Image 1 (cartoon, protein in one colour):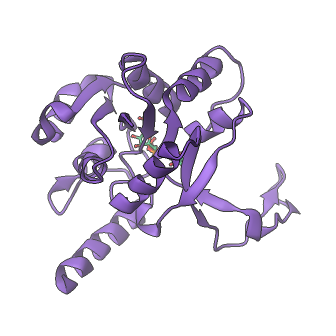
Image 2 (cartoon, rainbow, N blue to C red; image 1 turned 180 degrees about the vertical axis):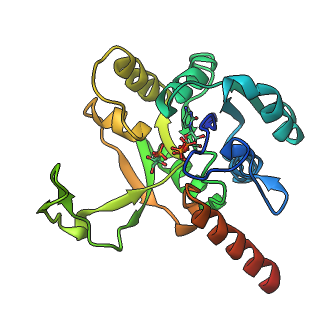
Length: 232
Ligand SMILES: Nc1ccn([C@@H]2O[C@H](COP(=O)(O)OP(=O)(O)OP(=O)(O)O)[C@@H](O)[C@H]2O)c(=O)n1
Ligand SMILES: C[C@](O)(CO)[C@H](O)COP(=O)(O)O
């Protein structure tokens, strides 16, 4: 199966508050973006990677992935995550691949097994597949006054991660439908596909695929890496 990966990396990282765009923040000297692309390619299921960069930073982002040669190219991203994915998707020739993985640059420590799990589901015929982990907190629904209105059954809840995988045509249809609609943005690509009524399969995710969102997340990632160095 020919699989291309899209890496939305055009976010500023406001909640992280770093001096550079979040995807270029180094952990042990290696930028998050470089780590995310390297993980995708090391899983050996992805033939090419397209990165969506902040429009004014295409050059430094290209430098961050230069080591991957022709396997990885960079395009200008958009104002929100969905637009960044759509712009990268538009840059891929229709029919040139069978499946597309969409993977946040911010999930830079995703184990290769998670990439393989998603690719395997596509190869098994799933039209859409996402990595998921059980939710460990009790989750509440609140009203506009922050008063709890409901407690969903936790056993049915999953936190979903990336990469999220789709049959090529399905992802294109989902983004075309979103671009033509007044529906609110979805926070992930699976959300757009769900709106088409297409079944999205979940596959095992991994806590190490955590999204680096806040300074605390970065500290956790650095501590985990330091620990790995000591024990390996
Ligand atoms: N206009 C945007 C916004 C986000 N993203 C990407 O979508 C992923 C998930 O977004 P998030 O982690 O929330 O990153 P930011 O939007 O940068 O974070 P913040 O909301 O704190 O600014 C990231 O890899 C981010 O670079 C993107 O490609 N284009
Ligand atoms: C796509 C995602 O990582 C799945 O959990 C998440 O929805 C991204 O959300 P963000 O608000 O753009 O960080």
